[in-house]
Image 1 (cartoon, rainbow, N blue to C red):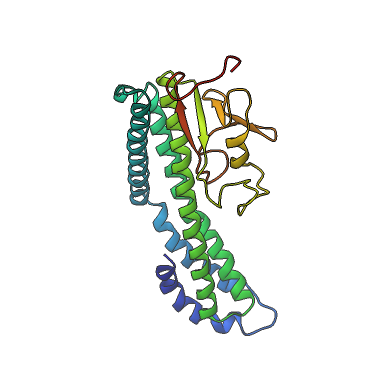
Image 2: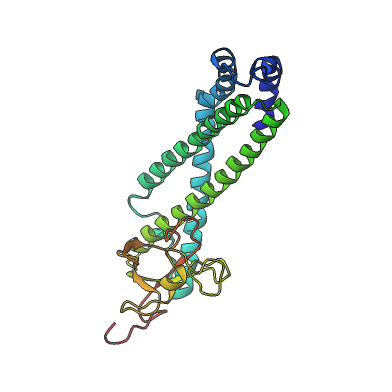
Length: 263
Protein backbone atom coordinates (compact mmCIF):
# COMPACT_ATOMS: atom_id res chain seq x y z
CA UNK A 1 0.00 0.00 0.00
CA UNK A 2 2.76 2.46 0.95
CA UNK A 3 4.70 1.83 -2.28
CA UNK A 4 1.60 2.38 -4.41
CA UNK A 5 0.76 5.54 -2.54
CA UNK A 6 4.29 6.94 -2.70
CA UNK A 7 4.60 6.25 -6.44
CA UNK A 8 1.58 8.51 -6.92
CA UNK A 9 2.70 11.08 -4.36
CA UNK A 10 6.34 11.35 -5.42
CA UNK A 11 5.90 13.44 -8.59
CA UNK A 12 3.52 15.78 -6.75
CA UNK A 13 5.89 16.16 -3.81
CA UNK A 14 8.79 16.88 -6.14
CA UNK A 15 6.70 19.36 -8.13
CA UNK A 16 5.49 21.17 -5.02
CA UNK A 17 8.79 21.05 -3.14
CA UNK A 18 9.91 24.56 -4.23
CA UNK A 19 6.63 25.97 -2.94
CA UNK A 20 6.57 24.34 0.48
CA UNK A 21 10.27 24.77 1.22
CA UNK A 22 10.75 28.29 -0.15
CA UNK A 23 9.72 30.27 2.92
CA UNK A 24 10.18 29.85 6.64
CA UNK A 25 6.51 30.79 6.97
CA UNK A 26 4.62 28.43 4.72
CA UNK A 27 1.49 29.40 2.83
CA UNK A 28 -0.60 26.25 2.59
CA UNK A 29 -3.47 27.38 0.41
CA UNK A 30 -2.14 26.07 -2.90
CA UNK A 31 -0.21 22.89 -2.30
CA UNK A 32 -2.40 21.59 0.52
CA UNK A 33 -5.38 21.09 -1.79
CA UNK A 34 -3.16 19.53 -4.46
CA UNK A 35 -1.55 16.97 -2.19
CA UNK A 36 -4.78 16.08 -0.38
CA UNK A 37 -6.43 15.45 -3.73
CA UNK A 38 -3.70 12.94 -4.62
CA UNK A 39 -3.95 11.10 -1.29
CA UNK A 40 -7.72 10.93 -1.47
CA UNK A 41 -7.60 9.68 -5.05
CA UNK A 42 -5.58 6.67 -3.88
CA UNK A 43 -7.72 6.18 -0.78
CA UNK A 44 -10.87 6.11 -2.92
CA UNK A 45 -9.75 2.70 -4.21
CA UNK A 46 -10.65 1.33 -0.78
CA UNK A 47 -14.15 2.83 -0.84
CA UNK A 48 -15.37 1.00 -3.94
CA UNK A 49 -17.91 -1.80 -4.20
CA UNK A 50 -15.10 -4.11 -5.33
CA UNK A 51 -13.15 -3.52 -2.12
CA UNK A 52 -16.36 -3.96 -0.12
CA UNK A 53 -16.93 -7.34 -1.79
CA UNK A 54 -13.33 -8.36 -1.13
CA UNK A 55 -13.68 -7.36 2.51
CA UNK A 56 -16.83 -9.45 2.81
CA UNK A 57 -15.10 -12.48 1.26
CA UNK A 58 -12.14 -12.17 3.61
CA UNK A 59 -14.37 -11.72 6.66
CA UNK A 60 -16.69 -14.57 5.73
CA UNK A 61 -13.74 -16.88 5.07
CA UNK A 62 -12.13 -16.03 8.40
CA UNK A 63 -15.36 -16.54 10.34
CA UNK A 64 -16.10 -19.81 8.55
CA UNK A 65 -12.64 -21.26 9.22
CA UNK A 66 -12.71 -20.19 12.86
CA UNK A 67 -16.19 -21.68 13.34
CA UNK A 68 -15.19 -25.00 11.78
CA UNK A 69 -12.03 -25.23 13.88
CA UNK A 70 -13.94 -24.34 17.03
CA UNK A 71 -16.63 -26.93 16.33
CA UNK A 72 -14.06 -29.67 15.87
CA UNK A 73 -12.05 -28.67 18.95
CA UNK A 74 -15.21 -28.57 21.07
CA UNK A 75 -16.44 -31.93 19.81
CA UNK A 76 -13.09 -33.58 20.50
CA UNK A 77 -12.82 -32.12 24.00
CA UNK A 78 -16.28 -33.37 24.98
CA UNK A 79 -15.76 -36.73 23.28
CA UNK A 80 -12.59 -37.27 25.29
CA UNK A 81 -14.45 -36.52 28.51
CA UNK A 82 -17.63 -38.56 28.05
CA UNK A 83 -17.04 -40.90 25.12
CA UNK A 84 -20.17 -39.65 23.35
CA UNK A 85 -20.19 -37.94 19.97
CA UNK A 86 -21.59 -34.43 20.43
CA UNK A 87 -21.38 -33.59 16.74
CA UNK A 88 -25.12 -32.90 16.56
CA UNK A 89 -24.88 -29.91 18.92
CA UNK A 90 -21.78 -28.32 17.41
CA UNK A 91 -24.04 -25.86 15.58
CA UNK A 92 -26.77 -24.94 18.07
CA UNK A 93 -29.80 -22.75 17.50
CA UNK A 94 -28.90 -19.12 16.97
CA UNK A 95 -25.40 -19.89 15.68
CA UNK A 96 -26.15 -18.84 12.09
CA UNK A 97 -27.39 -15.42 13.18
CA UNK A 98 -24.35 -14.99 15.41
CA UNK A 99 -21.95 -15.92 12.60
CA UNK A 100 -23.65 -13.50 10.20
CA UNK A 101 -23.38 -10.69 12.75
CA UNK A 102 -19.72 -11.54 13.36
CA UNK A 103 -19.04 -11.42 9.63
CA UNK A 104 -20.65 -7.98 9.33
CA UNK A 105 -18.63 -6.73 12.30
CA UNK A 106 -15.40 -7.97 10.76
CA UNK A 107 -16.24 -6.35 7.42
CA UNK A 108 -16.53 -3.02 9.22
CA UNK A 109 -13.20 -3.58 10.95
CA UNK A 110 -11.47 -4.45 7.68
CA UNK A 111 -12.91 -1.34 6.02
CA UNK A 112 -11.89 0.89 8.93
CA UNK A 113 -8.18 0.04 8.65
CA UNK A 114 -7.56 1.79 5.28
CA UNK A 115 -9.61 4.79 6.41
CA UNK A 116 -7.51 5.23 9.54
CA UNK A 117 -4.32 4.61 7.57
CA UNK A 118 -5.00 7.34 5.02
CA UNK A 119 -6.02 9.79 7.72
CA UNK A 120 -2.64 9.24 9.35
CA UNK A 121 -0.88 9.55 5.99
CA UNK A 122 -2.53 12.92 5.43
CA UNK A 123 -1.21 14.08 8.79
CA UNK A 124 2.29 12.79 7.98
CA UNK A 125 2.44 14.39 4.54
CA UNK A 126 1.04 17.76 5.57
CA UNK A 127 3.22 17.85 8.68
CA UNK A 128 6.29 16.95 6.66
CA UNK A 129 5.58 19.56 4.03
CA UNK A 130 4.94 22.24 6.66
CA UNK A 131 8.31 21.36 8.19
CA UNK A 132 10.03 21.51 4.80
CA UNK A 133 11.03 17.84 4.76
CA UNK A 134 12.38 16.33 1.57
CA UNK A 135 10.06 13.97 -0.32
CA UNK A 136 12.30 11.01 0.60
CA UNK A 137 11.95 11.81 4.31
CA UNK A 138 8.18 11.99 3.96
CA UNK A 139 8.22 8.67 2.11
CA UNK A 140 10.14 7.05 4.97
CA UNK A 141 7.53 8.23 7.46
CA UNK A 142 4.76 6.81 5.27
CA UNK A 143 6.53 3.44 5.17
CA UNK A 144 6.90 3.46 8.96
CA UNK A 145 3.20 4.22 9.34
CA UNK A 146 2.38 1.34 6.99
CA UNK A 147 4.31 -0.97 9.28
CA UNK A 148 2.32 0.29 12.25
CA UNK A 149 -0.97 -0.21 10.39
CA UNK A 150 0.04 -3.70 9.29
CA UNK A 151 0.95 -4.75 12.82
CA UNK A 152 -2.29 -3.28 14.14
CA UNK A 153 -4.30 -5.16 11.52
CA UNK A 154 -2.67 -8.43 12.56
CA UNK A 155 -3.40 -7.75 16.23
CA UNK A 156 -7.03 -6.96 15.40
CA UNK A 157 -7.34 -10.20 13.44
CA UNK A 158 -5.87 -12.28 16.25
CA UNK A 159 -8.09 -10.64 18.86
CA UNK A 160 -11.22 -11.09 16.77
CA UNK A 161 -10.55 -14.80 16.26
CA UNK A 162 -9.88 -15.20 19.99
CA UNK A 163 -13.15 -13.47 20.90
CA UNK A 164 -15.05 -15.43 18.26
CA UNK A 165 -13.73 -18.72 19.64
CA UNK A 166 -14.73 -17.67 23.14
CA UNK A 167 -18.32 -16.88 22.12
CA UNK A 168 -18.69 -20.01 19.99
CA UNK A 169 -17.41 -22.26 22.77
CA UNK A 170 -19.88 -20.82 25.29
CA UNK A 171 -22.77 -21.21 22.85
CA UNK A 172 -21.83 -24.84 22.31
CA UNK A 173 -21.36 -25.48 26.03
CA UNK A 174 -24.80 -24.01 26.71
CA UNK A 175 -26.39 -26.12 23.96
CA UNK A 176 -24.75 -29.24 25.40
CA UNK A 177 -26.07 -28.50 28.89
CA UNK A 178 -22.59 -27.91 30.28
CA UNK A 179 -22.83 -25.66 33.33
CA UNK A 180 -19.19 -25.15 34.30
CA UNK A 181 -15.80 -24.68 32.70
CA UNK A 182 -12.28 -24.49 34.05
CA UNK A 183 -9.99 -21.69 32.89
CA UNK A 184 -6.64 -22.77 31.49
CA UNK A 185 -3.99 -20.20 30.65
CA UNK A 186 -1.28 -20.49 28.00
CA UNK A 187 1.08 -21.25 30.90
CA UNK A 188 3.97 -19.14 29.67
CA UNK A 189 5.75 -15.87 30.48
CA UNK A 190 3.12 -13.80 28.67
CA UNK A 191 0.21 -14.83 30.89
CA UNK A 192 -1.21 -11.61 32.33
CA UNK A 193 -0.84 -11.18 36.08
CA UNK A 194 1.73 -13.96 36.55
CA UNK A 195 4.08 -12.63 39.27
CA UNK A 196 7.07 -14.21 37.53
CA UNK A 197 5.99 -13.32 33.99
CA UNK A 198 6.27 -10.29 31.72
CA UNK A 199 3.03 -8.62 32.83
CA UNK A 200 2.74 -9.07 36.61
CA UNK A 201 0.76 -5.83 37.06
CA UNK A 202 -1.84 -6.40 34.34
CA UNK A 203 -5.27 -4.93 35.14
CA UNK A 204 -6.99 -8.22 34.29
CA UNK A 205 -5.01 -11.20 35.57
CA UNK A 206 -5.56 -14.43 33.65
CA UNK A 207 -3.15 -16.01 36.14
CA UNK A 208 -5.37 -14.91 39.03
CA UNK A 209 -8.62 -15.89 37.32
CA UNK A 210 -7.25 -19.39 36.71
CA UNK A 211 -6.25 -19.68 40.39
CA UNK A 212 -9.10 -18.10 42.32
CA UNK A 213 -11.84 -20.24 43.82
CA UNK A 214 -15.32 -18.71 44.06
CA UNK A 215 -16.87 -21.88 45.43
CA UNK A 216 -16.75 -24.27 42.48
CA UNK A 217 -13.04 -25.10 42.58
CA UNK A 218 -9.86 -23.27 41.47
CA UNK A 219 -10.42 -21.54 38.14
CA UNK A 220 -13.93 -22.98 37.77
CA UNK A 221 -16.80 -20.73 36.68
CA UNK A 222 -20.35 -20.99 35.44
CA UNK A 223 -20.73 -20.78 31.67
CA UNK A 224 -23.62 -18.37 32.17
CA UNK A 225 -21.70 -16.01 34.46
CA UNK A 226 -17.97 -16.12 33.82
CA UNK A 227 -15.40 -14.67 36.19
CA UNK A 228 -15.15 -11.40 38.07
CA UNK A 229 -11.81 -9.67 38.56
CA UNK A 230 -11.29 -6.35 40.32
CA UNK A 231 -14.88 -5.34 39.75
CA UNK A 232 -14.98 -6.36 36.07
CA UNK A 233 -17.71 -8.96 35.56
CA UNK A 234 -18.70 -11.49 32.89
CA UNK A 235 -15.10 -12.33 31.96
CA UNK A 236 -14.72 -15.45 29.81
CA UNK A 237 -11.67 -17.31 28.42
CA UNK A 238 -10.46 -15.67 25.22
CA UNK A 239 -12.12 -12.39 26.25
CA UNK A 240 -10.52 -11.60 29.60
CA UNK A 241 -8.60 -8.82 27.82
CA UNK A 242 -7.46 -8.07 24.24
CA UNK A 243 -5.45 -10.99 22.80
CA UNK A 244 -6.37 -13.24 25.73
CA UNK A 245 -5.17 -16.80 25.06
CA UNK A 246 -7.06 -18.61 27.81
CA UNK A 247 -9.43 -21.47 27.03
CA UNK A 248 -12.44 -22.82 28.91
CA UNK A 249 -12.33 -26.58 29.49
CA UNK A 250 -15.85 -28.03 29.63
CA UNK A 251 -16.55 -29.73 32.96
CA UNK A 252 -18.98 -32.61 33.35
CA UNK A 253 -19.80 -33.66 36.94
CA UNK A 254 -18.72 -37.21 37.69
CA UNK A 255 -16.59 -37.36 34.56
CA UNK A 256 -13.90 -34.69 34.72
CA UNK A 257 -15.37 -32.56 37.50
CA UNK A 258 -15.85 -33.75 41.07
CA UNK A 259 -17.13 -30.87 43.22
CA UNK A 260 -17.28 -31.51 46.94
CA UNK A 261 -20.60 -31.76 48.76
CA UNK A 262 -20.70 -28.02 49.34
CA UNK A 263 -19.75 -27.12 45.75
